[in-house]
Image (tube, helix red, strand yellow):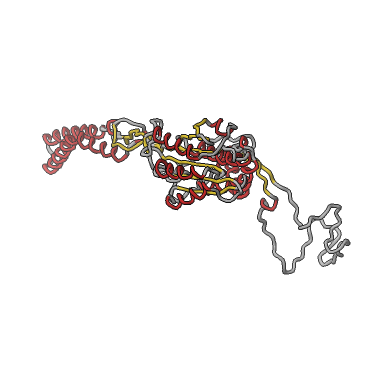
Length: 429
């Protein structure tokens, strides 16, 4: 029987076990609050904890009581005025009988909300549950800081926890058989001689021989029983060797349009999408690289701070970002070794002449090598030229290409979950 002892430190007056049970019970309300928080928060506050409000009706406990019907005669404890069978007049004040000074609610229900706080870690856990990067299949030895232990036979030395009982007992039995063989054969001969002397009768000569044989038999028994049942030499241990663990090598390209047609509200919505994506990658994947690309008429690879907070703007040439991405893939991320992902956000506006160049760049240098390509078009206008181009590509690369439209901040989180929902058989690495 195995005993599991939970030694995680609890904060004052709190129980981790009870808290986990509580969070599991009210996970529906927590998911709703987390989803609402994504649309109303600032980007800088996105990864903080959240206050969760649960209506009183949702925390009511089930009770058992007698159902209506039947005849019951009850005289409550402490009664001094009535006896069984007395009739009590209806209290004045109408059918309700209430005479309080408070104001009744319109629907007959009161509301006392229960509010509690979830931590940053719990917030992110609910935010990204059941999400994963699709099609992560290519594995290479990314580094040597992660290992697996594989069985490699037995060894004469090792950890007592790794002892091989069957091999050890087999070795002990073989050792005892080998060491006691000569004495056991001699003991059988002595016993046979003693039996022959018993049949020969009593005489001083046979008595002397019998005494010598009994003394030898005692000596042989001592030698046989002196051999230990288990010796250090017998112990065998399961040998495990440390083998480097293959880790998935993945890179995510974040491509954002910062042209003049992207209003500040549209840029804010795009940044929310990419910030959610960045938090998701940082939380669930230890070894993944993120490449940030901003583009207007020209594309540029930038760092995280510049990607989210720079104010540079200009015209719109989407092919510049796609060509830059293709060059980076060719130089640094071999498709045979890397899982390549792309997330692109734009308002869909692009020069008409540039759409063909985008099509050629995607067909030749990007889509054949990526695991998954996502595109969101932001705004409430009719679909633009870039959307129609990507619709055509989605039909040809259905298993690795996904497009969605987003009108405002409230739609970011549902769209994000739709793009990166985990399918059957996919696991986090």
